Image (cartoon, helix red, strand yellow):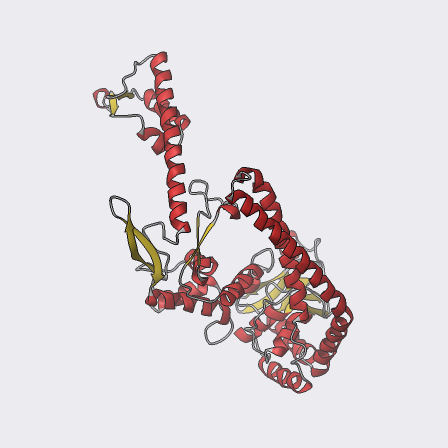
Length: 465
């Protein structure tokens, strides 16, 4: 660049620099970088000299401008928070499934107040997304990637743009769709979640009911990588994510003869060699057939199902009294916590206590309440297990259906194994199948329908090793 073209960068005020760069420190670094290339910064309204004193003056101006910017941001957030508390919508673009409507004017300038209302066409797409995720399309439920793919293939776009996995996840995780829009949930700069005490919950028209949203939330939690092996959800192979070698490592599919043959092989053997694991490769079709035969003949046998259900009934009858007493105790503790929370709010509202003084205490109450609710939910689910509606006739009927369907590696077979089994372990000429009693009971109570109301548990408890 020619010297005469880089002599000056003129700015009417220093105010724009802290706003653009965030802090006076970032502005100072940028100013130093410009100076290396012979560019100096002058102000028409705030003249400073090009010496150490002038540099100090520019730092002071920038620091004051940064302070003023933060003060403006604080007052703006306060006004927007009050706007949200009154039930109005802050922002220009409504969430997908909604539109903004005028809800009156306020102030001397007649500022328009907006609220959220349903967009019928988009709301139907939201319902379809939840239905696909929970119930699937003509069969077992599908994941977010497949939902985005199906919507795009059908020409159902997101306001003119293709659906992506991230947008599907946003829809499935947004409480707005069950009628509760949350303002001030995230820090606009760091994108971190704020304390729930700072959230402002605004009632809006609901697109789905709370029960459907909770079911989708439980499914998302159960399918997290920490809870469920990702390959189990995405692989077309029947046993991927379930099959374990006797050494403890997973077994994956490898191919031979240019993909003509498929084998299950130990990951340790593949990556570390025969010294790490001596297990041989096992033909995939043969192994899958053996597992399906074992599931049909043993797991789905009426006698085996009756044995598991009878054992659960006996267990629940022994522990039922103690669980009821525990639930009553938890309910009493919950009421005590709720009373304490109410008193704290009243103290803040009457200004007897400052909000900063009670923040830590409020967080303690919140954490305790959440732990009580989680424990109560677990005990309630155990008590509400649908054992009473399972009759011998129903067991026989479900057994016949499952044994008829679990013959080959089909989408239904994969979905069933993912829902009920937790592990298939291969040891030379022996196969051990482990799974969940509660999932098996849920499958029987639903008549063999994989779209059960609760998320299957992956605790290995009905086939001890």
